[in-house]
Structures are given as C-alpha cells and as structure tokens.
Image (tube, rainbow over all chains, first blue to last red; front, side, top):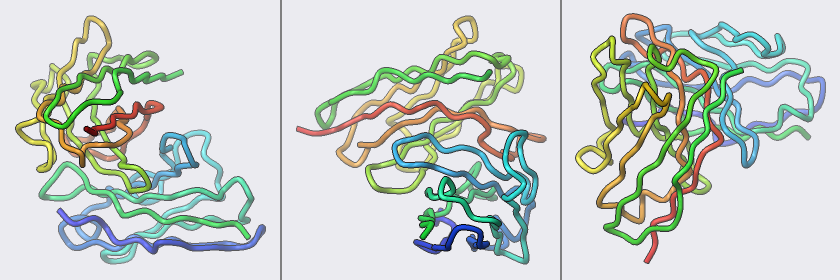
Length: 110
Length: 124
C-alpha cells in the first residue's frame, strides 16, 4: 500500500495561513470521508488534530481546519504561531488496509 | 485522562525476539480497539497492526512487512496490550507507539490517543 502523498515541507510566517495537501486515490482519500491529521513535535508522540476530514477533537485550536476535494485532503492552519512548527501527517481509511499514512510534512514557522 | 504507557523496548540482535507492553488507563479497555504504529529514525509513521475488542471478535490484522513475525494480543484483566516481535530485522528498528482506535462499523476513523513510544533497536 503506497503512502498518501504530502509535500515534504511548507513554511510560513507568524500570523499567516498555510495549507498542507494530502493526495490519495479513489480507494482511500477520494472514496471515503475518513481522513485524519496528526501533529508531531520533535521527540514527542503524534497528536490527533482533525478526524473525518474536518472535525476537531475537543481541545484542538480552531485555527486548525480540514477539507477535501476529490482525492486530495487539506489541512489549513490559520494565524500561524511558533508552537505550530512540527511534522504533520495525514491518514485515511483504505480498502486494502485498515488505514494508510501520508509521508509527513515538516512545517517551519519563519 | 487517557494514558498509554509503553515498555519493553531495547537493543536486540537480528533474528532475536522482544515483547512490548502498553498499559492503558482512563479508557474502557475492554471495549477498545487498539493498534501499534512504528516510526523508524527520521522517517514517517507506519502502521504495524491492530486488534479488535473481544466483543468484536478480538481478531488481528497486520501490515505486510511484519505479518508472520509479529503478534498482537491483549489482556483485558490487566488493561494491557502486547506486541510480540520475533525474527527481528534491522529494518524493524523504530519507536513503537500504541494507540487507541476510533472506529465506526469496523472502519478506523482515527487514532485518538497515543503512548509516548518505546524504542526498539535491532543491531548486531
């Protein structure tokens, strides 16, 4: 099962908005609304930020939002803050395995 | 508060075995679907396998790279998840995380809670 495709890195300045894409196929992202996003700071465990494409767990800032168009899901972080600097992973249900992860995106806050 | 605490990692030689444990609290473990996810040094996340709750059959699924070598089990009386790893290879070197699974009609929606991870190093 190939990983979902994410850009290796994105960057933005404090206060700006950035978007991270996650591209799959009709067998995963495009076929189901079961996309989730995880934030991972260096040396820490991943943390769930978005589930079912656009839902935020309790306690996650509303600066984080998710969307999907066709086989590409997106995570948008608005009003960027220094603490948002981390790696971000998308994940999706897939017909061939319980789920599949994206390759990860490193967000740098300039 | 949900807590998942992994233990059992360490250095092992190629071909060796290791058993990881994950002690859970703050959740109704009996009803929980659980998984193991690993992350090789400097790499991304990779699912290892999952186990359903006993009420949903208690069955397991594994990723292709570990199928036949790794076994996931659970002891609901101890709120503990296990990962038995046999015939270890150098490429199994990674931090291993246990996670809870949020499922709807047996479909994995998200990996809601993660432990802090335990490092397994396979080297001669």
